[in-house]
Length: 435
Ligand SMILES: [Zn+2]
Image (cartoon, rainbow, N blue to C red):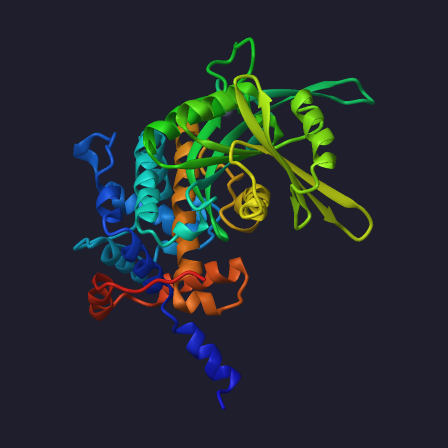
């Protein structure tokens, strides 16, 4: 029999940081090199820390769920942390870890594209590994969920790119303006994991714009970047009813992308009418509670509509989607599941990143460029963390909550030094399986 005390002891010695590094090395042999090679905007003669030291430190801060930059400096200011950081990066000597002012100064000047490029490298490596092929929609298309969310809110003007919204106090009649920053995300859905593959900040070009930036405009910018970055990748855009419009259909046609978009009453009236009248007539087009009508003509193309009615205890919920993937018995259920996977980005994606870990609504810096870079580093971290928690053997077996997993990682980083033996093991290939 193992006593509880022994079990606690054993837990304490689990090498979570080593395991985290093993996953990083397994998927991203070149990540350290890429972190080091970002275009450094600083004056080279005053540099104490190379970019990889700064960036990796922030990645570990995010992964171990440290909320503020000040806390990071406090928690990491230990000999073991310094040694672990330098060993994991293959750096001979590191006397101290960089102070958070040094980190924020660097991030306020680093171009966000540098980090976007690193994320692109990470996503492409995953796609090339073929281990996620089974999750593709209709056996071919990578599901990419598009969704926006609010990040920062300020009572006073923060910068010239802030979005503004006025609120009227009904009782006093007083009008208040709040200043905000929002982001539009494109996330790749693979099973239970959602990986950020593009982030487009919703922001005004200048303070005196006539019309403020909005989610759909951000999508039009994002579409160009996605197409440029993933030129031949078969993509299926999954989005809410805001995107059920001609412009979006046209872009998908042009890019040879599939789309699967939530379709609501009033989205496109003619298509909805035709769907409603045909679905009752053609009983054959119904399977496992899903009904569909293919080939409804709309402008220059034909679209397909499918619907699933979920019976709840007291009422029911209807999920209707418009798509350019032909619906049949074979794929109806998977399409509905893929469409509903949009909630993942809201739940596991945004809620998780806001309330459970990372605290993306907390501005780590007041500088807008640094805020963007912090956000991108969080997305990079989140890819590593998800692969770690879903792929690493010791993590798959635990039923711990996210916060506990993060604090375990932090404790290992602070108390267990990577040994020479560990470093040799990190170089060797491992097997990673996702269930
Ligand atoms: Zn601002």
